[in-house]
Image 1 (spheres, one colour):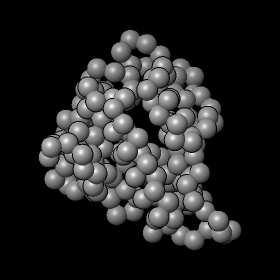
Image 2 (cartoon, rainbow, N blue to C red; image 1 turned 90 degrees about the horizontal axis):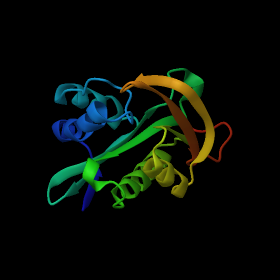
Image 3 (cartoon, rainbow, N blue to C red; image 1 turned 180 degrees about the horizontal axis):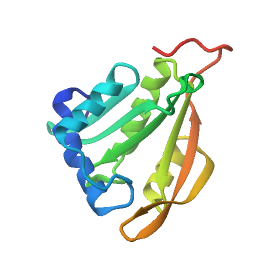
Amino acid sequence: MLLREAGLGDAEACAAIYAPYVRETAISFETSPPSAAEMARRIARVMHTHAWLVLEDAGQVIGYAYGGPMKERAAYRWSCEVSVYLELGRRRTGGGRLLYEALLARLAERGYCTAIAGMTLPNEASEGLHKALGFEPIGVYRRIGWKLGAWHDVAWVQRPLACGDDPPTEPH
């Protein structure tokens, strides 16, 4: 398997991986899968400031992970929100861990101090992955999203990346 930074040419593959999560699960709260063009805009928005990585197997993109701004307000600029997606049949194969470890390292290199992730509940695979990577629970939004005929909770977890200076240096 090959792990690398995403390019705009990966948008179609990332959109194809994400689409079943949107259409068939409550893991994503989107209700219409984004087009390849929209996915390219999302990649472009974060690739130079945060990170977007893809995982290939035999030359085919099988997963991706990205980090982006947690919130728009300036005081949040050292924190990022992170996500990881694998082709549905490839969950629990180690690909998510590989992607996330590389993503978190890249974000730390760029000067980010904290990673935040949200998970629609229940989601044992995601909960286990985040716990194994050192994320700690910080709260649950109860009945926050309506999808597929039901209310869903979202659990939020947090993990420190790297910051030692107060004040911290600007992320780059």
